[in-house]
Structure formats: structure tokens, C-alpha cells
Image (cartoon, rainbow, N blue to C red):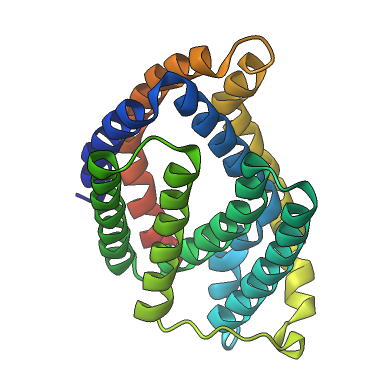
Length: 252
């Protein structure tokens, strides 16, 4: 049901985004978003991949220890991103530098909740997607086409999902570095580096074409291409639903 809702909303969002932005701005949007997605995979360091492994070992407060590590990463990446944004001051680069840490943190907490309670996590995911679609519809009806506006909706979607996860799962976020289990951190990085490499290679398999095309074509032509690719990628959401449910049932 969750993935079915995402497919319907994905098609709806795709129509609105393409009609709102037009081919040229859509090409810019797709290009930046692909860079953000791939950077998020790399900067994740695959740490969250080890959560179910260490959870089964019965380590006390394991969820809290992982959340502390994730929050430390988020703060570090965001400080670096803000510093780079002040230095470069270009809208595309600012989005890349500041949206990436948010997406890293969102995917990490999302994985924890996938293991802990997939049903609640799916409800929150659907709610976040519906809020994004409604916001996109309002922007489409009442605003003029701007890259910064559609990028702002991405921030809204990721931050709203993050806040829902933090509130409903009662995650406690600490800034104290003494709370970090550095021995666990070392183990999670060692565990996660290979899954991270597999994930980035898989992402490149489906996304590197957009980065390569940008070297040879305009943003307008890239916009037409990404429209077709975006519609096609909605198909793989269906088998992905079974993967998530099976993983959640076996991870514990």
C-alpha cells in the first residue's frame, strides 16, 4: 500500500514538476538531485547497514548509540556544507552542499525505523509524501517557475519526514561528543564500507547517464531525457515493496 501510494504520487509529482519547471529548469533540477543522491550514498559511509547486525547481538541502548553517531555526522556535514555555501554562493552548489546532509540523516533514521517498526515508518512516509504533493500543487497553481522554489520543496519534504520520525519514534538527539561510542563507530564503518560501494555502483548504473549527458547536451535536452527516465523508474518501486517488508521481518 505504501509503495502504491508512492507510485501514484510520484506520477502526479512528475507531471506537476515537469509542467511547472519546463524542460530547461527540469534538466537543472534533475542534474542537481542526482548529484545530491549519489553524494548522500557516499557520505552515509554505509554505517546504517550494520544496525540489524549489532541489534541482534543484544548490545544495550544500541538504537540510541546509532542515533548519536548519525546526529554527529549530520552536524559535521551541515557545518561543512554551510561553510562551502558561504564560499561559493551559487544556488546549485548551495542546494548540493546543504540538502545532502539532510538526506543522509533522513535515510539513516529511516533505516532504523524500517527495522524497528515498518508499519509506522510507512505511515509517516506516506504522510510526508502527501504533504509534499499538496505543497507542490499549491506552488504549481500560484507561483512562477523558479529552481529555488522547487528545491525548497525538497528541503520541506526531507525535513518534514525527519521531524515525523524524530517525534513519533522519540529519538533523542545529543550534541555531546562523549555520548559517541567510538568503538562501535569504527566497527560500523568497517562493516558498511562494502555495502556503500555496492550502493554507489548501483546508483551510478542508473544515474551516471544524466551526469554524462550534461557534458554534451543542454539542460533543456536533459530535461526531456529525465522525464522519460523518471517515468520508467516508477516501475521498480513495485518489487522494492517486497524487499522492504522481507528485510524488516528478518532484520531482527
